[in-house]
Amino acid sequence: MKARNYIGLMILTSLLLSGCQATPAQDIVANKNDHQTEQSKAESVVDSTEVADDEKIVSEGYSESFASDSGDVIINIQVGQVKVRPIPVMQAEAQDISVDDVKQWSKAFFGTEDVYEGNSQMTKSEIQEEILLRQQWINDRDRLITEEGYTEEAADAVIQSYQEEIDNLKAHYESAPEDDDRQKTDWTFHPASYYMKTAEDGEDEDWGNLDKTDKLKVIGDCDGKMAYVSASNRSTPDYQLHSIMFYWDDEQAGWENNGKSSISQEEAVKLTNQKLKELTDGEWTVNAVWSIGNQWRIQYVPSIDQIPCVYSTIDYTADDTYASNLDYEQIDFSVTDDQIVSAEWDTPMKVTSADSQTSELKSFAELYDAFKTYMKVSTSVSSLGLMEDDSEDAAVNITKIQQMYCRVKEKNTDNTYQYVPVYAFLGKISVSGTEDTNDSIFCLIHAIDGTIINAGLGY
Image 1 (cartoon, one colour):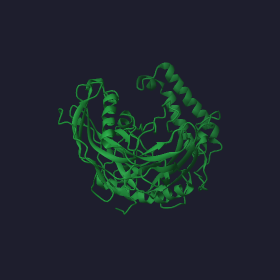
Image 2: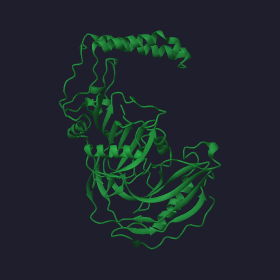
Image 3: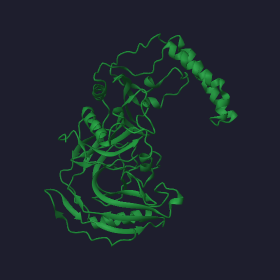
Image 4: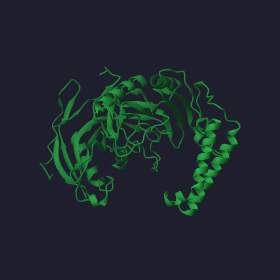
């Protein structure tokens, strides 16, 4: 079960140019000190000028507009000063979720480590209820056709699957307990099927691939609600998984799609910022905040020495031998009214070393020219995930150029990663004058060698 449901913002994020991402909505650091028409032509880049102990201005800004080569999108640039700090390349590696992590999350959400195994268990009465429910579905074949839109053949297949589940439930009835006799956890990771097998599953289920994932799942009480903490580790050629999540047994409880949260965005961030301190050490920045009904969604990304890290979805469908199969690190929360109903930490990374000297960055003027070339060639209505009907008034409005760290996979390695300094070109899509809510990254340029980074591929 996944605690988060990315819709809207995250769908858009994956549709934009390779590597686009929602970007810091606020500069909040947790666990550290607590605390158009065509306008004038692009302004020239000035010589680097020191403005702080280690920060330099590499550009006084740009103001220009140009069309993409496809001719259906206008790119507007309106950015102010670009400031950078000398930062080293960092070596890093993914970390397994540990038993101690699960204990820490249990303590944070349940207030205790006295918790129970989270494997599926059904009592005799629960099995009887499930059998009765499926029998009602079988007896209502007409509803599948008239209301659900199934063909007669498809409806028969669904009914057959219900009957198979009934047979499996009956087979487990005699061995099922009268009452929930769940055991206290012994804090041991198991193959995933240990927690995922249910009484509905048949004996012929193939769990081989799934059992390459090790899991530890516990159940406890969170403010009177049954809830879980679940951790997963997997390192296989198809994908890696290092994740820990908390979620209510009924994640939809209290959620109203057309409602409005009882707390403000600032209050929700304050709530999750405090909880974050209980879950993990480190430096974190709020990357995106959005609401769905009366629920706030808040995403954090790691920062390294107050430089935020890039977040993007990984393209697991890419046929690229060099592509990464490891998600970017993030922690996200779902807050229904004033209650945290889910949290998830994906891919904890550990910085293992830093280059002893900072590398010299390429001329910003050269990198800006590379950005313009990239935007002209790669930007189109389809690449932005827009409909063809939007082609007459679609625009990308670049309003900020920010220094960030981007995790890249070293080519010809299985699991070697670096955090490298990049320039991120941020902005919003505009259609008929209406802009997106959150900024996205439209281009990432390696600040040392000048190459375009495809965050979706991880290099």
